[in-house]
Amino acid sequence: MKPTLFLLAAGMGSRYGGLKQLDGLGPNGETIMDYSIYDAIQAGFGKIVWVIRKDFEEQFRTQILSKYEGLIPCELCFQALDALPEGFTVPEGRQKPWGTNHAVLMGKDIIREPFCVINCDDFYGRDAFMQIGKFLSNLPEGAKNQYAMVGFRVCNTLSENGTVARGVCAYNDKRHLTDVVERTEIVRCAADGSQAGAADQPIRYKDEQGQWQALEENVPVSMNMWGFTPDYFDYSEAYFREFLSDPKNMENLKAEFFIPLMVNKLITEGTATCEVLDTTSKWFGVTYAADRQDTVDRIQRLVDEGIYPNKLF
Image: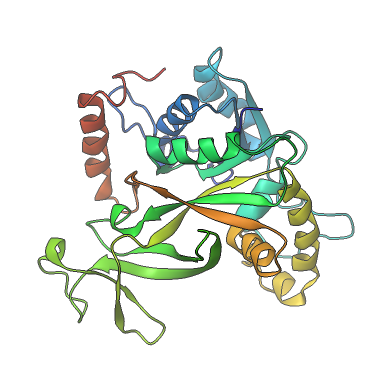
C-alpha cells in the first residue's frame, strides 16, 4: 500500500489571517503545507489526512481540502481536549491540548497503512519526503515495530535571526535511534555566545549549566518528521493511559503527550526500532517574523530553479 501523509494541524484556529500555517508564501499564495503535500505526492504517497479541531471543519473543507479535490484522497480526523480513554476526564482548568502524540492517536480509525507524521508549518523539502516515502513503501506487508524519523543535518535547520530548539539525535551502528535530547538554544556563535560574523562560526548549543558547547555540522536533529506503521496507535493508546494515570500529569495543566516521549519508551524497552534517515533537504520555516521574507525568497529560488512549478495546484 502507498503510505499516508498525516499532517498535524489541530493547532490552527478559525482566525486564519494571522496564522503562519496558512500564510501565502509561494508566488501564487501557496502555503508551506501546499509544498509538503506536493512533495509527498511526488514521493509516492497515496492519501492525505489532517488532524484538526472540529469547530473549524466546515471552513477547513472549503479553504483547504477543496484545492486537492481530484488530486489525491483526503480525510479529516479531530483532536479534542476531552478525547480521552474511558474512565478519564479533563482536569478542571485545563485548556491546553494533550500534545502531538495525542493528535496522532486521533488517526487510529482511518489510517491503516504505513504513515508519515509532519508539522503543517515546516518546509521539509523534496529529498526528505523521498527518504521517508521510500522507507515506508519498502516495508513488508503487515510490518510492525519498524519506525523511522528523518534526521535533518543541524546545519540545514538554523535561522539567521536567532536561536532554534532542536531534538539532537544519537544513533547506533545500524542507524537506529538511541536518544533524543532537546536543545532549546542552538545557533552559530563564538564560544562566549557572540554572534558577530556568525556565518563563519561553529554551531553551538547552550547546555544545562548555561555554557556554550560545540555541535558538529551534520549531527542529525528531529524536525518532527516520523514514519510509523499502524501498530504505533495501539502502543500510544496504552501508554496514554499510563500518562493520564500519573498524578503529576493531571495536576500539571500544561503536561503534554509528545511523540518523542512515546518513541523513546518503545526504543528503550526494545519493543521497536526507529531508523534515523539522512537527508540533504534544507529545512526552513517562519520561526521569527524576520524569517518570513527569507522564506518567500527561498521558495521563489526553488521555483526559478524548476524544482517546483510556478503554480502547484
